[in-house]
Amino acid sequence: MKPKNIFDNLEFPTGEKEVFQALFEKRNIQIERILSNGQRSPRTGYYDQEKDEWVILLAGKAGIEFKEQEIIHLRKGDYLLIKAHQKHRVVYTSQHPPCIWLAIHF
Image 1 (cartoon, rainbow, N blue to C red):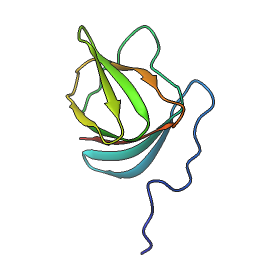
Image 2 (tube, rainbow, N blue to C red; image 1 turned 180 degrees about the horizontal axis):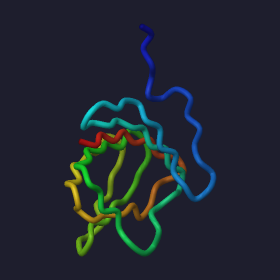
Image 3 (tube, rainbow, N blue to C red; image 1 turned 30 degrees about the horizontal axis):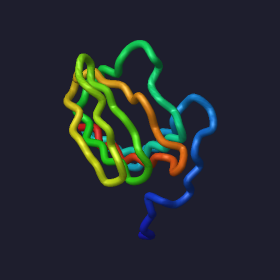
Image 4 (cartoon, rainbow, N blue to C red; image 1 turned 180 degrees about the vertical axis):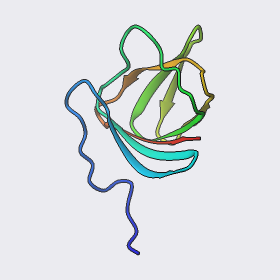
């Protein structure tokens, strides 16, 4: 078995959509790498996920807004738990440096 590295093969998006890459999936857990380069959620609406999500920002800076709450500013190394059905959206992601996220859905 050969190890893989979270920082290998980084192809950052140039359009409106982030890049989501599944790293592991089994039963009730999914681990993915997300690459952002200035992308954000649509200005209207919020994500309303069926599962809890634990996310860590491995590079860059970003802001997440929870419905009817202030924006949480994240920097490299910051992590948080987003509970299922906790409405949220990404309001900004940095470009210099771009963002590398690790998200675990369970």
